Length: 413
Ligand code: PLP
Image (tube, rainbow, N blue to C red; front, side):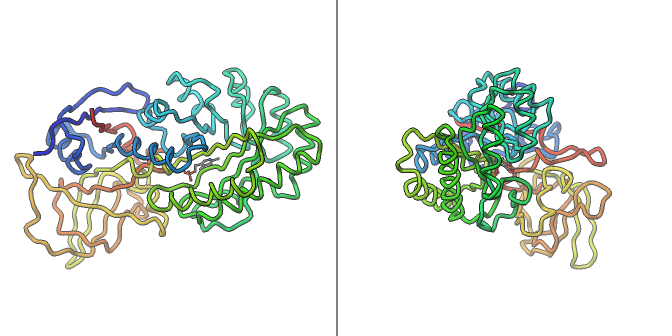
């Protein structure tokens, strides 16, 4: 077999990773790795489990540096706070976007210095602001007068980045502009309020929306940010120096399109800006494709042609994104015989199948009319691209856990 020299480590959130298997080659596919895990620990394997492929994370970082060499990534921890992902990104030079005290704590616990953190939540609880001040996290976003007042009170040395609402409808599935971002006509009032409070506004941030956003939206939002830079200088405020282009990136060809739109926007609107710092807050880009989920079939019901199955993860767990109709989930099957060797499906016919999650709620349905061969108990369903807003949004409803604490780490040695 090609599996010769790749290390797998077991990394439970917050727990130091333990080495498990050290025998896979760098060419091993994620399916080779999943099969190796199941074969190596057939009796103890705890399902569901995820595999974090660090080779993917490294490739994504290389791609980022190639496409956007002047844009510093601040990984959005909320997207997936797996500790091995965070420490890998830290060692690859990423900085971090934290949204809360706990996220800041997890990054500082890796030995990352507070200057590498932006507290990118425009509305923060006072106790979290106090905590940020105490550990030296000194840059945050805001979009309201109330936030200026809180920051003046609890963290007067904090630099402010004004979060604006991008104008364009970007087509993103998650439009954050409904909740955050100052409107252009609110900008002068907010800048003056910060100035009056003695706080420094050092830049502008936006977020074009997560997943499926139109790459052209970056260029439009960069133009809007430029208008805010100009407003600040018209008001006689110190020159702004940070342009924060937020998240909304996915990997693949869409990233090339986004990179083009960003480079073009910066060149068109910020070429003469001198010592401008451009930063971004990618979450989905680094997390989505790096994680694969393996779940076990724990129940079966046949109603004529309709085959129904229960698996041990679902919409209250790692597969929470499947509640959204537009979120396309695909899966593959794996079967092992009693000796834990790969077994094939004798009948290649597929049936329109339903796959339920493990909780007692009937909305906990992961797939409907999905073509699958006839499955048996203890077969496996493997779901790719399961890293973005999966384990971080999962609950323990009905006492079932997601794959968060059961994540294997794969990397080439
Ligand atoms: N930055 C902020 C402020 C966010 O709210 C989010 C997502 O909600 C992100 C970055 C990450 O976005 P994405 O996963 O689309 O890259």
